[in-house]
Length: 126
Image 1: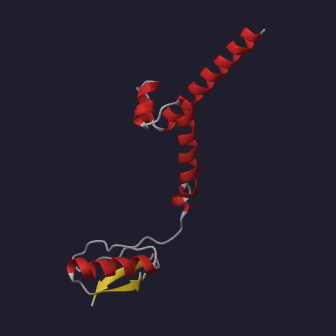
Image 2 (image 1 turned 120 degrees about the vertical axis):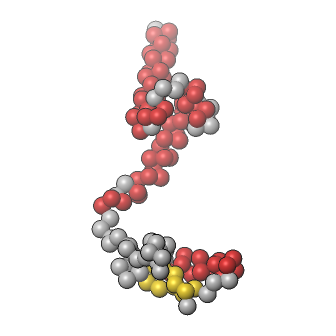
Image 3 (image 1 turned 60 degrees about the vertical axis):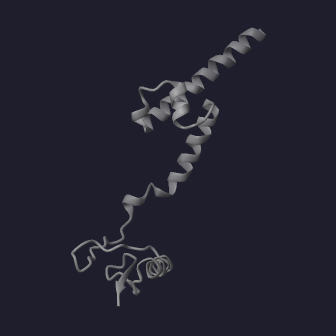
């Protein structure tokens, strides 16, 4: 009876590993041809359990980004004097930090202003 339980535990463990690998190969098709050992080396981990934890952490970190395509914010079409797209900053603070860095790096005097398309913040000379 004990042997049957241990065989069942081994069978369940193998099925669990196969499910983890199959799930990973669906989300990372470029890894389909790799063996279990190669996949573990690719992620620089030592076991399937670590791989399972890694996958769980990846899923958790990408959940907030799943709705990016649903974002209804306008697209910035602002360009500089050369017709190139202007850098866009998410916050006034991040734009100010970049302006301060450019003063030091390139001796540029830049001002921060709100994007006219309400997309964020831009920098301008002057």
